[in-house]
Amino acid sequence: MKNIKLIIVAAVFFLISAACWLTPDKEFSQSERRPLAQKPEINIQNLLSGQLESDAEKYTADQFPLREQLRSLKALTEYGLFMKKDNNDIYIQDSHAAKILYPYSEKSVSNATSIFGEIYESFIQDTDSAGNGRIFVSVIPDKGYYLAEEKGCPHIDYDKLFAQVIEEMDYARYIDLTGTLEADSYYRTDLHWRQEKILPAAEALGRAMGLELAGLDDLRQITATDSFAGVYKGQSGLPLKAEPLIYLTDDMIEGCKTFNYETNQEGKVYDLEKLSGRDPYDVFVSGASALITIENPEAAKKTDRELIIFRDSFGSSLAPLLLSDYAKITLVDLRYIKPSYLNQFIDFEGQDILFIYGTTLLNDSYTIKR
Picture 1 (cartoon, helix red, strand yellow):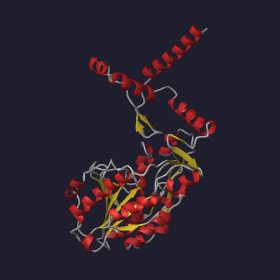
Picture 2 (cartoon, one colour):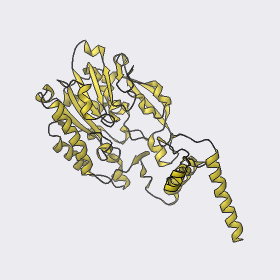
Picture 3 (cartoon, one colour):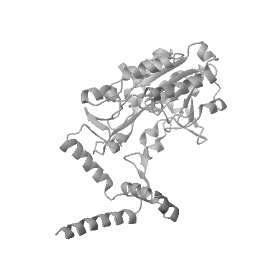
């Protein structure tokens, strides 16, 4: 009987492995927003070094038959049967999926602020921007700021993080956004904030920066898709319900032109082709990219004011809401461009400067180039 059981188990594992290696590989996991391991190269060098074994293990795990269904079963078991608070560090509170942000990394925050400080010293401190007090900094709290304590999940000391940024960036005026946001300001299945829910945050930034932001309340809401499923849906493994992705626009925004220095292409503020791509959130100014400019012909008729935003992906949906007061906005993502290259593309003289980053990136800032 024992031999029969062993034979059955071995046969099952053999059939599963054979199915994994014989079926066509999937290149990308849409739910997890990451590339999947591909079939490893079989050669003597990889075999002798042990690399083949390691690569084969990753490949089998990523290309496992019924992988998504089994991930969901595991997640439902963790939450429902074992009553765990989280699965893969994702927890559910008030119908929102959120990621545990813990522990607090003072070193990581200092890494980020030191890079920002180097940019200030190299390009900004001797300009009119510094002389006229036109440098601002703000931190966007992740959803855990509003959800983690109620759920009983560990979370960073947010007040300590905010205070550290203020202290280490004393050349910039800090703008507090915590009171302008709530859990419902963010997508239920994603880490990002919802553009249609962040008008109070944009208004707070506008007041602090001396902007009028005329027409902000008159922007039209356009539902780009009703089936947006954010990154936390895939990471949690739970069958979370998709939700609408909405963008705000008017004739002025529609008349703006973008230029992406990475692709050397012009475009629109909202790139609707991205809706069918890997991450529909990239509809906002074409998503993550090293350097993008937005030129506003309508505003240029009455002002030559410009804004430079050092940002992560949250800035993509924020920038359109600030356009009414600027002839040009430049978006800089330091994850994709070294600061030493900036003066080759940007003339730092007299612009408003805004450093605005989410707590998630600041607490793990080593993707920022220096």
